[in-house]
Image 1 (tube, rainbow, N blue to C red):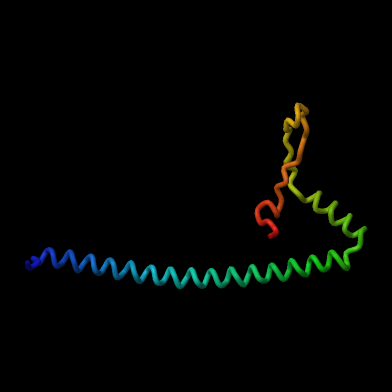
Image 2 (spheres, one colour; image 1 turned 30 degrees about the horizontal axis):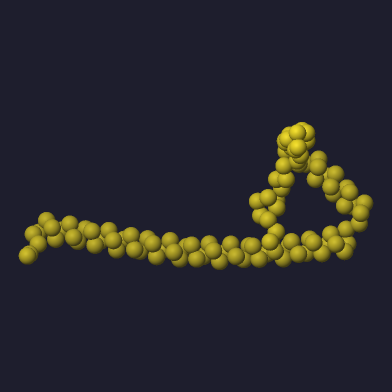
Length: 108
């Protein structure tokens, strides 16, 4: 069964569309690999920074400096009430909601 001219044009248009879509997917895949690679490098740098910061806090930061740092962090932190009242064995208790950096990116 032979295809008519209109049907051949439609098939050709579909093949062109599929070819264009494949090229777009290949380009997107290359871009995704580049982004993934860059993301990996950034995460690696943050891991190095985190290790350096932990070493600094553990070995060099004095207690008085630590206290001043905590006060400064408290000053610049947004004033958001992250506490709620819960019922524990019939008693109402106020507890803090632990939303901090570890909430979003837990240490594993």
